Image (cartoon, rainbow, N blue to C red; front, side):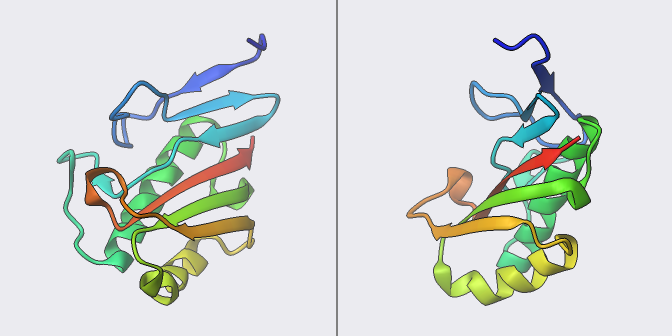
Length: 127
């Protein structure tokens, strides 16, 4: 493993629900694991619609990035997974409010996401 590899953890984001880290920082980049709309205070997905879930996902990403010494403005790439591509426009309307720098992005429909989430986002950012 690279000598400068750092495991990132934020108590303000949900704990990993499997054998992985919230993020890894290496060589000046932060690679986040996918975040779903788990509210770290309750451990549940409380939001029911795509807009509210997207906001919670981005709050979770923001907390992880800040723990790594970065922020949403330094994101260079996201990969987005939607349970239903019919939610694409509503998802985009929320996403655009937070990712104003327009990072590169992939967005795909996934048959099923963990905990039956409607959206999952992972990101790569610079420190």
